[in-house]
Image (cartoon, rainbow, N blue to C red; front, side, top):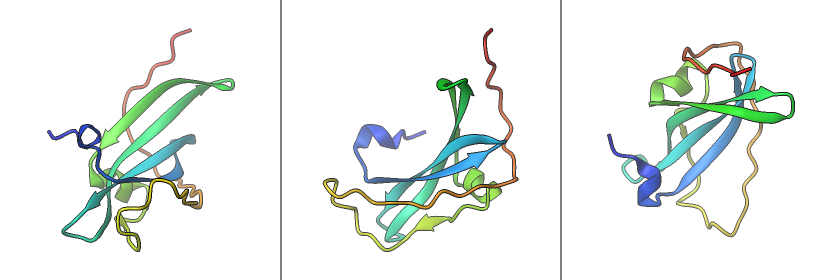
Length: 103
């Protein structure tokens, strides 16, 4: 598996929710599509006001399960000096994976 973050590609993120927990969907620039394509969903497990675990689901199918867009079109790789705003999105859909909290 190619790990795109090591190649310094262009990323966009979209805040969301999965399994009743905050999450972020990651989108990686795809030259062929001319858009940032869905790549992963990372779910944050909280313990009070602290993040105690991150669980990443790699693959476009996970964004589809949460009814998130397949791609974020409209920007050619963005200027890293310009911050973009994304609208949070909630979903009643679930992903499965182990993310134990140690007591």
